Length: 199
Image 1 (tube, rainbow, N blue to C red):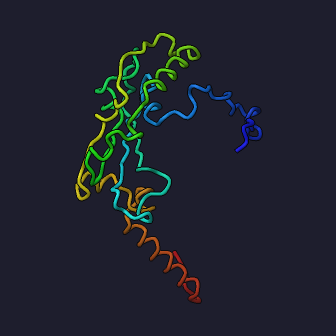
Image 2 (image 1 turned 90 degrees about the vertical axis):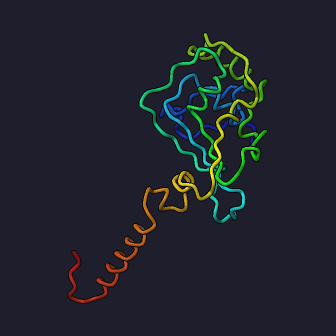
Image 3 (image 1 turned 120 degrees about the vertical axis):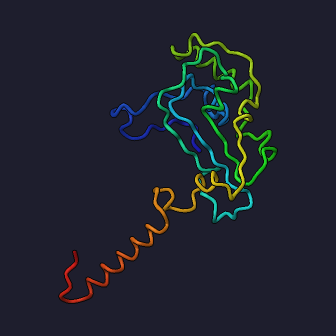
């Protein structure tokens, strides 16, 4: 990969370039990113699928399904970072399907290295006016471990959250897809039948 910076074509002309990302904010752990916002407008639910599923059955490109649920109003603006455990449990939830909490204990998905987090907050305090008055409080690396919920594979919650296929992603039932396929087949047959008028 080239180390030189390449801008997307026309990005400057279309106001799509916000400047190079500061070094202290590059390559942050996912847990660090989740702990940086001062306020939140959505709740995020990350569904971690069972480990025994074959590669073909898993959703590609994701560790799990990530669902964002808009809230009626944003959370209160924090004056101290990192957030408290209780604040995070209201904003982020990891649902383990068919696994125990011990399976993800110490996982990089839940850990925000203290040095990395401190450097990121200090960088934001110097460069972002909204963070200028934020205080940096005490906090452990595993602040997100309290946001983990475990459920059985056959539970009602798991059935609601797990995506089984493209129809689920579209909010459709598999039966809807079958009906559409049948309707398409009827139309194809109608085109071959002379004198038949399709509605």
